[in-house]
Length: 90
Image (cartoon, rainbow, N blue to C red):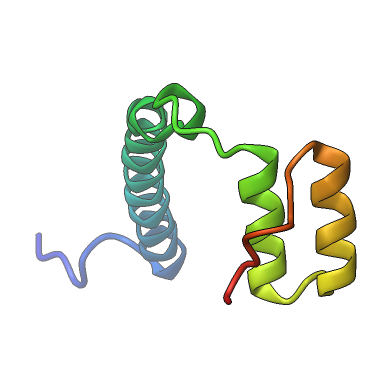
């Protein structure tokens, strides 16, 4: 007896393609999740001990232009810093 075709219709081919894509999608997602999970601990900024002081954060905001000079001076004085001899950027 002779067989014609591959023995699988169009629906079987479509299902096989869908299963292959689903399998590889799950494999890739699993690898990404594992890398994120195990790589997260080394990138924690609070674990390094290099925290910025409030004065440094305020100076960064002033440098980015988020606050004006008057507000910077006023807030720095509230934080306990002195502004008599040093001005940022000048």
